[in-house]
Length: 199
Image (cartoon, rainbow, N blue to C red; front, side, top):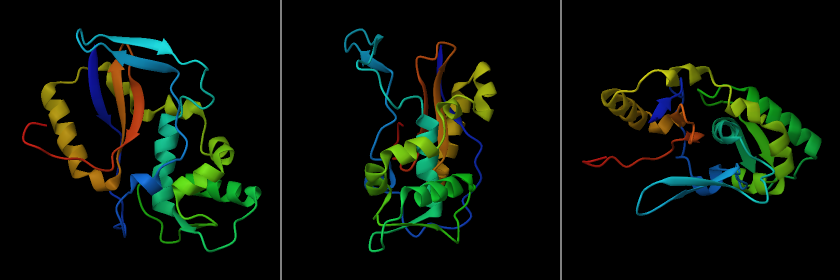
């Protein structure tokens, strides 16, 4: 079994952001829930899994959630002072936003009136976001998945880590996976990192 961090295809974001990604305001208010709970024995380091009960209502959307968060950061403008819109209009704007490139910032950002940030918007419009940001299949059907069938050397992993560290401001989305067991199969977006002497 090998555990890897596989870099997704990414191009530089074309314009510098006016601010850094802020976890407290630029992420979703609701989680991509887990079907399984993972517990690591502190003595043996063995991992055991348990199905969550009750079962989750919104699971297997890890890539959908991280890509949507990135899309909102690149392409949305929130304006809390303006009047909120009907759900049908927000639906149209969410769909427009999700069709834009995840590799560059929009000059003409899509206005989301009535809310201060993504966290506030997703807290109020949870069902709307869950219905229109993408389906669970998009967390499984990824172009780069073919790469996991080949071995990953330590030097390859080190090069990938250095590349990701250099691109941290571009919000790279990565696939964290163990193969072939798939005890871990998850998508994350990197927005910050600490580079120390030993890691």
